[in-house]
Amino acid sequence: MKHLLPLTLFFIFVVGLSAQPVASPNIEAALFNLPDVIFKKIESPEGFEAAYELKVRQPLDHKHPDKGHFYQRVFLTHKGFDRTTVICTEGYERPTNRVYELTRLLNANQLDVEHRYFGESKPEKFDYQYLNLEQATADLHHINEVFREIYKGKWVSTGISKGGQTTIYYRYFYPADVDVSVSYVAPLNLELEEKRIYTFLDTVGSAECRAKVKAVQMRMLKNRTEVLPKLQWYAKGAGWKFSRINLEQAFEYVVLEYPFSFWQLGHDCSKIPGDNVTLDSAMSHILSVSNIDFFSDEQITGYHSHFYQAGDEMGYYSYRTDEFKGLLKALPMKPNPSAIFMPPGTATSFDGELPRKVAKWLDDWGNNFIYINGNSDTWSATAVRPSGKTNAVFFFMPKTDHGRARIKNMTKVEREKLVGTLEQWLGMEIE
Image 1 (cartoon, rainbow, N blue to C red):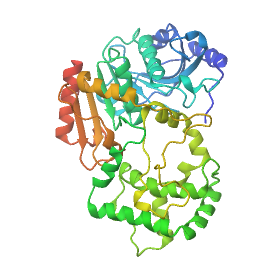
Image 2 (image 1 turned 30 degrees about the horizontal axis):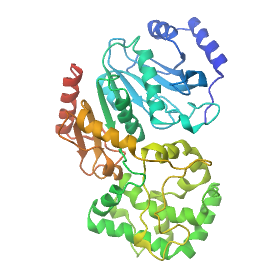
Image 3 (image 1 turned 120 degrees about the vertical axis):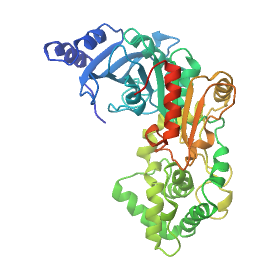
Image 4 (image 1 turned 180 degrees about the vertical axis):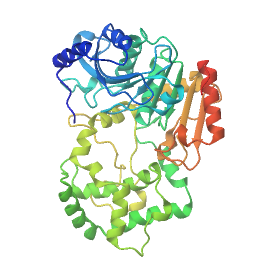
């Protein structure tokens, strides 16, 4: 992981910029005057005036600021003070600057916000009681308040996947912060074990393709005595360790995860190997879809904050085992094994109250929302659906997975509908 300068040196470096040529003295003068913001100039993306990596001081507990603070990493891409501002609500780490397609479409400024407790946006001590959606959205609200001093036009929030979830929750807690919310491929899970995902996996695609997926799973489990030694060498060569869960458990997780990842990531049914290929080829295929490294100590530890949020408030999914009676040796048949690996010393405390409140609020009051989903994406199973009570606009793009459900992949008709909606809600013309 890239380490930034200590904050003192970071600030000295910024002060030193006054002696250097800059693209826009006005934006830097404005940044100097903002409270709680430290900045460093970075390379500007094509078509923008300037870009900066920011450190924004945030309370650990927004209700009790005396409990301490941390610095949240934010990337600012500046277009102009008279432009719309897009605030991107990341769900994870954001190590480098990137420009969202919505920002380019609107020819807007962009604030890309790394999620608290991820990447470099971490307190010195990981006290998970402060990792919740109320605190995370309060971070976004504070950034909104600070930057409205210089960006006084329209504001749009957007995020992808877990970042899209954050966009939804941000609007729920702070409905007046933005004029429009655009949420991509975002589940709104109402249960710790979302059973709607099972229904999706039973109905997505063709019956022939689903049968081929199941056949690969069965072949791996029935040939475990041959597969496990190969996996041991595979993991050893890659340097992965399995102490949180052992290698045999990880193998079974790989098999159970396979259909979820297959549809989420848009794999090709014609590439699924049949019984005529070698076991090594079948094993290579399943690992290319559902890699065992996801269940290694390194990956599980890296996603601790994600798993904590899933187990505490956001809900997630488990793996149905009823089809594999007698074939699972390391994982329990009942209850279904969870896809959540909580950090040591914590336990799931999910009660579903918050997502149910949010779902009801979206149904009744969630105006000026645009939801972009792919109908072949596993996470579309728990996507927000139309209630008919709001002006929200929904796109379920046919034969489209988690990574391709984007404006750039829309049909002409879909794109015209989206652009027309944004023009109406933002009161602007989009080129």
